Amino acid sequence: AAAGAVAAGGLGCWAVTSAPPTEVNINIRQISEEVFDTSDNLFVFFLDRDEDLLDRKPDIQRVIRTLMKEEAMRRVTFYYNVRNEGDPPVPDGSGPDAPQEGGAPPLRCVMYKGQRKTVIRVGDEVPVPKIVEFFTALSEKLAEAQRALAVQRVSGETFAGDVLGASAPGRPVLLQLYEDTCFLCFLMRPFVNSLAELLAEHKVPLRFKRLNIEKNDFPDACPVARGTPTFVLFRGEQERASKWEEFKPKELVERLSKEYPNLPDEVYSQMDDLQGLVSKRFQLFTQLAMWTMELSKLDTLLAS
Image 1 (cartoon, one colour):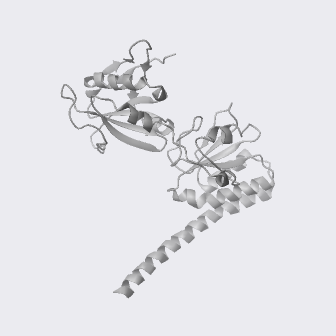
Image 2 (tube, one colour):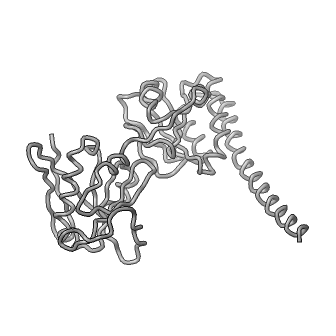
Image 3 (tube, rainbow, N blue to C red):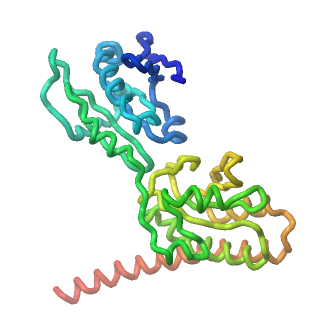
């Protein structure tokens, strides 16, 4: 069934309805920080003035109607945003520069899927193949060795079986969402590996796994995370996943202690020792960076 839809702005509201034989009502409202932080598959029309919401209504309707004919676009949600004074300009992106029929400039649109973002300009012709391609889920190809690690690597394609199907209320999976460019993720990797090993030794029914969100879009049933590292607890397909906002080593240990309050005291003590090693590792990397800079200065001095 089609969802009811109203596009509301400071100047009024309007509904977007596709042509027969299928009627589709699309909610289009102003994007917010909350929506961006919790939602995926976003298509945002960027407008320069409040009045553009009504002035560009026919163009916006045309774009949405064209895209909603594509089955792959049915999970995409459409929003608009009005540029405020002082906001940074939206990059021009790719697409036509020439005005549309009637003299209006091309619509500037920003598409978001996973951690990916791209800006396009849409004129009289809607670049449907390009847009559909962008919203096609990204999934990395994993080697068997990566899937066999103690902290198993997961991809978009293996997520359903490796996380949802492998978890249950009595044997949850704690999934770490990480990025290769996240320094804290790098610092925490040995810590998380050691935590997983420690809990496995004490037969704690919790398995750690990892998903690289630079190389994979957010799979279905995986919460959106705009910062890393983020941890998500899965207890099976029937329960909603729980996103842990805590991501610092000490906070992660505290959360695990609350989830498993009846472990031997020695386990909590070892977990606390492990999280303390992350700070030491950071100090060592800081020292290494300083020594590297000093050596570079010395090389320059000797070469002069």
